[in-house]
Image (cartoon, rainbow over all chains, first blue to last red; front, top):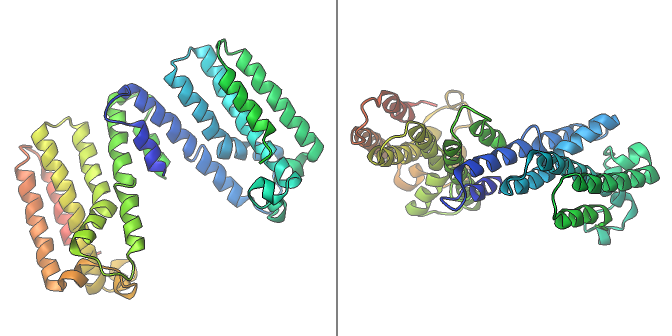
Length: 178
Length: 178
């Protein structure tokens, strides 16, 4: 599946080679040791151990955040946006990546398994460090709302005129029930 | 590790973006469903089942051959070789990929585990289809020698002047004891 992603990014024709290279670079860095795979490694190594908030945030920034950020950046690259919009969209991607994880941790303790579509309470059972465990449930909810506002502020500061789809994406990440 | 390979192929500078895209394309196609991963899937699905030589060859062409061929092709791409040399080197890569597997199957039944560096006789024990099982030991050896000659012939037909390193690679693939 991972090879297929790079295959899709490198068609024989239809996409400028320089753009293909740029997209492959973004995907490779976000999927590998500095991104998803590295975050997953920290996650596996930390089961049953207490993690400082800083380490927990770094883990999620890599594990979930990096690929979500890269998805936004790849769209930005295809749109040839200016530097200001690039920075804003990169930050937007990082914020919704983090928000996704905070909401994931909240849903794990508040939702029933049948709504969640996976076993609820699994994090706690496996003694996985989560934002809820670290901050408590209500502060985690406040943090999610804070990230939600931040995401919208960053979009507004991007200088882009049509951010409706990204705005909905931010809403969806925060409001989801499963 | 796979993401790292694509990361190495897409540096910020030093390699033309068009070359980066070409190398990513070669690697992606050889690592994915049409290559290594697809071959491995056939392999896993065929344990304990008799395979026709054609299917066995297709499996190895993907599983081992595709990445070996891509390695040679990526060097050829970096060297900007002409069409004739490209075709010859592509064929060379496919031949040594196949030869590697035939020799692997031979060593599995002829070498002791300590020389092999892995458990000898494992293929037979797991009832995996191999060239030795399919052809018999001596015909498999003859086939390996045939592929060895073919590899050298293809190199000579490439029109390239310095093929010493690739020639040694072919020898190494056939003559290896482990």
